[in-house]
Length: 71
Image (tube, rainbow, N blue to C red; front, side, top):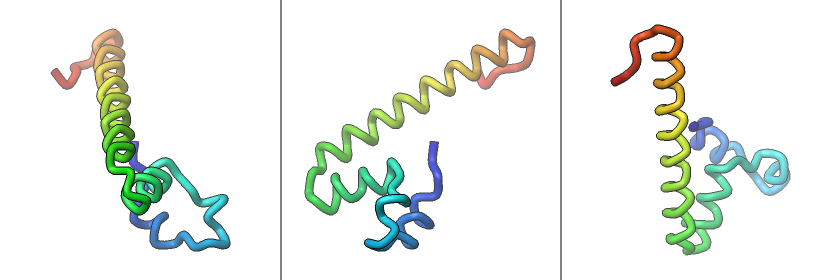
């Protein structure tokens, strides 16, 4: 789910912002820089729920294919 926030954030500048904006940097800019902490928290929680759902689905898929799952 992560894509290297630090590298993207460090290489962003005003001239390439329109093509280098990713989910994490957008959340950081709106949530932390602009002081919308509730927005940043909500997006972080949503990202965690999506990641957990993908984990559960991948585990179920592995078990259906006869492999050993995570739990």
